[in-house]
Length: 314
Image (cartoon, rainbow, N blue to C red; front, top):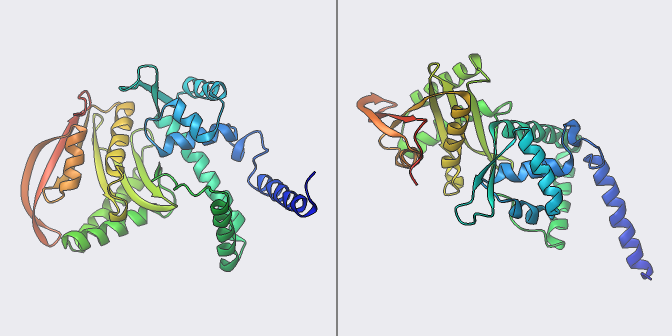
């Protein structure tokens, strides 16, 4: 038998559980009015936040029964959401990753979750919002669930993200390289053309998000029927070292192959050494360079290309 005070506390915890599960829709057959259950949505999230997980790792992270997870993954495979590759370290394991279709499915759920939570807490005053978040952090800390969140997720741009891309390019390139406002103007032109001429079958944008904050971006745009152009790769300084730039480029290559392009091209500058390293490791080759005066500096512009039949260097 529980003593009276403990029994009251147990009741309070159960009451809170009922409240929260009702508010976030855990009991609905289809999570967030999607075609996925809550467990399926969580598996999509795990695969979106980390590249090339094994089923064993997913099961351990989520506490899912291996048989149940296998059924989920089989269903994802039949729907074209997940790709498998042999593990180089263990032939008994497969490395799982989301396809372009899988990332779009995750993005739809992520957007709905974002909107639903925003609607729920948006009715509260700023002070009450802070109290709520503080209480949640206290629960995490007291129950020992203080492991850091994943470093980042990749998602399609949302409203306001394109303005962020323009703003951050202008600010970062001035801070780090001393480039003037011409760079921000060029970025705005690229973004405006992307929005106006957007072809959802041949073009795509990605935002890297960490702890609810934008920390990276890239666009892939149609150059010709056979050539795609990678544009506006950026990673915030505080998020560098996490592999975000390489992951963003990898996503452009994956999408370009599925969209039927034969070549990806890009224009960069010799001073952007970190970006050039990412491109080289992904398999791009430097095909042309030319000195020019732009952005308030004398720079060496470079054109890089990747034939999509090639494999990245290991």
